[in-house]
Image (tube, rainbow, N blue to C red; front, side):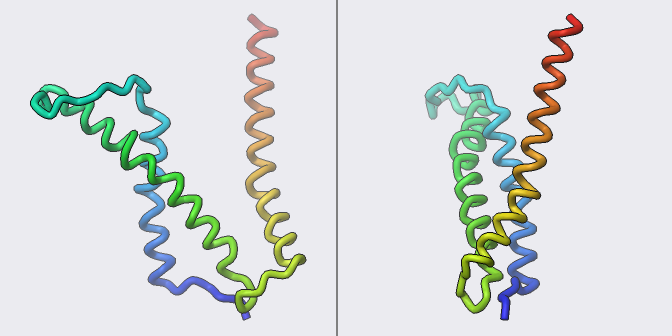
Length: 121
């Protein structure tokens, strides 16, 4: 019998996704000129302080948390904790279809757009 998430656990994971997505965005949207902050001049550099806090400190936790959650959820529905080879192959086939194919399509579209731009201009 497969194990499924109870409603409370599912709601907690759903609630955690949005802040984690924001933190990943902050990490990727930050300016990479990191400067040391002087605690005495905090009021003058509050923007830098907040940016560094979210982008470099809290943001650094988002990707590992996504990694752990995805690993947990990948194996969560295993039959009584037993993972057979066929179950594992079926899971990876789904992942290839839902992750790899869109990744390749978007990259090919970007490549085509760049090639078209270079051809036209």
